[in-house]
Amino acid sequence: MGRLPFSVYDFFGYLACGFLLLVGADYALDLGVPFSDGWSLPEGSLFILIAYVTGQIAAGLAAWLLERQIVHRCIGSPYNYLLQAISNCQRRLFPGFTAPLPETTRKRVLERARAAGIQEPGEALFLHAFARVKQDEITLTRLNGFLALYGFCRNMAFVLLLLAMLFVWADVVTGKPVDARWIVFSVLGAAGMFWRYLKFFRQYTYEVFVTYSELS
Image 1 (cartoon, rainbow, N blue to C red):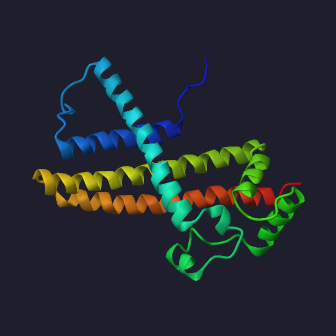
Image 2: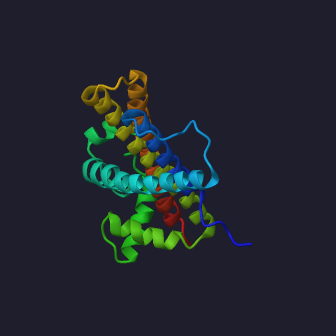
Image 3: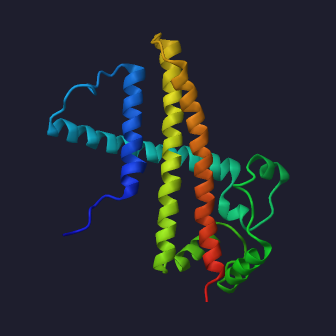
């Protein structure tokens, strides 16, 4: 019997986020989705498919907004923080995310990279290190675990932020009474999941560099 075509990340990263977004949007916009009614198998299967597609779209938007615009452009990528000095302001705002590797480990990584023709920290060095360490099955399994974790946290942070804006818009613009607790929960949840996303995103890169520094 063949392996299932879906992974744990498909369930948590896409399906769960898509389901939450659909439920929240139905509450805020009165879409009329009959969640309380009994669904037939085709209806339930269709809703699961819609939730999965919605989650895929949300994941793409989350990657563009949170990862490329906010992290890479505003905060900075962990493959830079781990290998070089940063400003005190960045370190105070994001102390865990911006903590560098131990000095000895940094030197080992940079020495190996220079021997491979890469002179400076950056994306090229990270891609080179990743290409080397992913050949080890145990390391690749750990990396895939961190990838699933930070992808789920990133997607969920985006969905909760979007729902918070939907709840406020519904309450202010359309006049639909929205329980303020849902708005507070969405905002706090988005902030908490974004913080967890930063943690696992850094740990993913940390794992790549530490393993690369110890290659024989």
